[in-house]
Image (cartoon, rainbow, N blue to C red):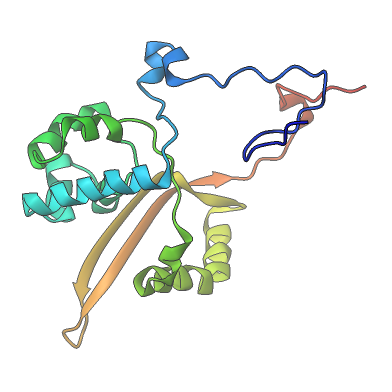
Length: 201
């Protein structure tokens, strides 16, 4: 009896093997244009490296590029970290702002990205302190949102983030992070409003 190789599934004898997983080539053209192929961590890291190298070659800051694109600086930075999708109406603007970006990378940026983060970034002090601030103030933030808006959450999808600076009373530079998200109320689940109730045996 042949032993299972790494990654093989132990299907029982007599059961048919599952059909092959569809590839991007099997998708209709319209879908291929908006669905990214599965990218490994190394491939994504390589793309991000090329995008950041192109930004460095342009000599422009994220603020400067954001001004040319008409986007927030945080969203613009996320484009370069492949954490946001480059929309079709912004492609030409980015091409003009950072002409060092390769055409294939511009095409890759237009696909829906696999958003996420490497847990290693939590060891970076700047990232960790921001996380710490949100968690430390988490209950207070929730309580104030509930008082001002009701029972619900702030969306991170219909959402704007901007990172800026100001000067304190002692002349020190201070960081200002603005999060502007749509309020999403929790709904009461009225049975007659459920358009897809579960089956009942």
